[in-house]
Image (cartoon, rainbow, N blue to C red; front, side, top):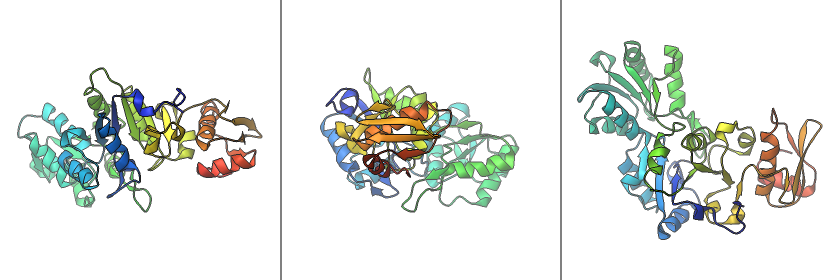
Length: 339
C-alpha cells in the first residue's frame, strides 16, 4: 500500500537509484526478480542509476558485471565510492600528488585516472591515504596507512560498511578495516565519502530535472540513512542485510519511507507498504501488554509490519512482540520475528 489504493509505487518517481549488493545481486548472482524489475523500468523509459559503496570495482566494471547478469547498465549510470573519493582528492591536491591506496586495484585506477599518483608505502610521502574495500588488504597495507596518517596524510575512507552480504551471511566490510586504523590511531577518518553520506544520492538526483528520485536499498545504516540525508524517499527491501527486528529498532534517521520483501514492491501495490502505518489498520491491531507488543487480527504480513513500526517507533525502547491470534503467529513467522 502506497497511500493511493491501486497505485504502483514506481509511478510516483522519475528515477530509481539502486544499491547493488543485497538488492540487485548477492556477490555474483542476481537476486530473484531483480533482472526483470530493472528491465521493466527500462522498458517504461524510467531513469535508473546504481550507487554502491563497494570500492573494489570501477564504474565500467560494475556496468559489465550487471550486463553479464542480464541487467543492462551503462558506466555513466553507476556511481561508486571509489570514483567519488578520487574526485574529492583531485579537487584537494595538486596534480601528480602521491596518494597511498589501501584497497583493490580499481581504487588505484580511479586515483590514477584523476591525475594523482597511487603509492604503496608511507616513505613515499603521500599527501593522503584513501582506504576502500579490497579482499587482499592485509596487515602490511594497514600498517603503512597508519604510519602515513600519523605523519600528517589526510585519511579518506570510501565507506564504513561494517559488513558485506554473502551467501554465508555478513562478512567483514571496509568499515571493519577502517576500525583497525581507528583503533591504532585513536581517531576517525578525516572524510567518509560513501553512504550514509548523501553525495552519491544527491549526484544521482540532480540528473532528473524536476523529477522525484526513489532510493532502493537493503541497509538501514547506509542506503536508508543516506537517502534521508539527501532528502529522498526510500524503499527498504528485505533481500540483504537489514531485517525486520533491525527495522523495528531503527532510530529516526534510519527509517525508510516504504518496505517490501523484494523489488516486486516497485510494481505491485500488494507487495509494498508505507511505514509507519497506524497501530489499528489493515485488519491488524497492536497493543502494549505486559511490556510486550501484542499483534492481533488478520491481514497482510506487510500491513502487520506497518502497524508494528507505528508502535515500536513511538516506544522509548523496543519491547518484544507476541501474537494474539493464529493469523498473527503466521504473520510474525513470515516477517522473521520470533513469537
